[in-house]
Length: 102
Image: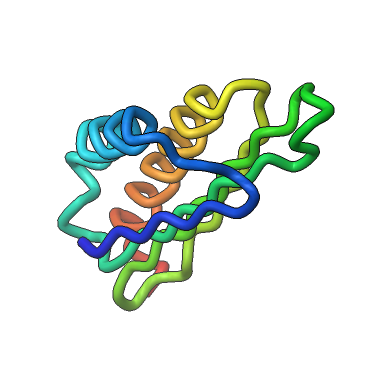
């Protein structure tokens, strides 16, 4: 499983990267064998003004299946990452186990 993390207008602290990697491996434990690639984009939408503006987008690529695209916006980046990863893993498992999606 190839994982890429991209940050736009947002600094990824080492602690946030560690948090993301731990959550990714835990949440995608069952779906890992179905996934070829995951691309994660983190962004602070209105940087200096604050508010509910932390964006986490996830693209999951599986061989022979449609791409899973999830977008989550929250006040806290950890919440955005957690929610997006859970939704992406759920959708990935649904597609991977669906017999008619090939």
